[in-house]
Image 1 (cartoon, rainbow, N blue to C red):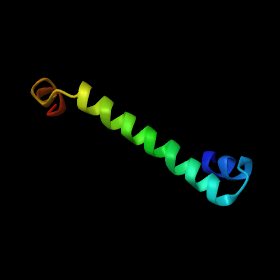
Image 2 (image 1 turned 90 degrees about the horizontal axis):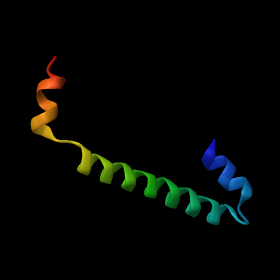
Image 3 (image 1 turned 90 degrees about the vertical axis):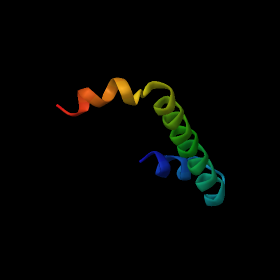
Amino acid sequence: MFTGWLLDRSATKQQGYTDAFLVFGVLVAFGGLCFALLVNPERDAPRSLG
């Protein structure tokens, strides 16, 4: 839905797709950074085994 909204709001479809890829790329990078900073394998391993 968000990609469609960006496409509708942009001047051209090319700019809309560029904006959508940029936004979702930033979100993926932010998620990866959070994962790298917050996950501790030694601490989280016993919890994930049950």
